[in-house]
Length: 127
Image (cartoon, rainbow, N blue to C red; front, side, top):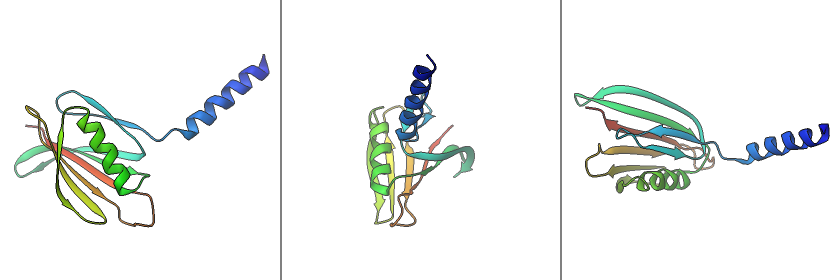
């Protein structure tokens, strides 16, 4: 019986180690999206252009293209359409729009192209 329990715990541990780091965020209209390859996240409110905005800052463990695709797919599953505002080798700025929802501004930046680490910021107006 002890061997079965030990093997079960070992299998559970090894399975958990292979899973990508995931996090969930709550969008303004109440939908929750899950994001992959997230190492850390910070959420805060700030005022920009005389509007209160919700910001979510992510440190990820994937390259720029992968992070952009993951975030885009998660938002598009919730009805958002993306429009790339600016793009170069190390950054992408995207607007996500959905009828009757706040526009989401997303900025993705890979500071070192030799490392699979990308920073992402999502923000939207609260009021």
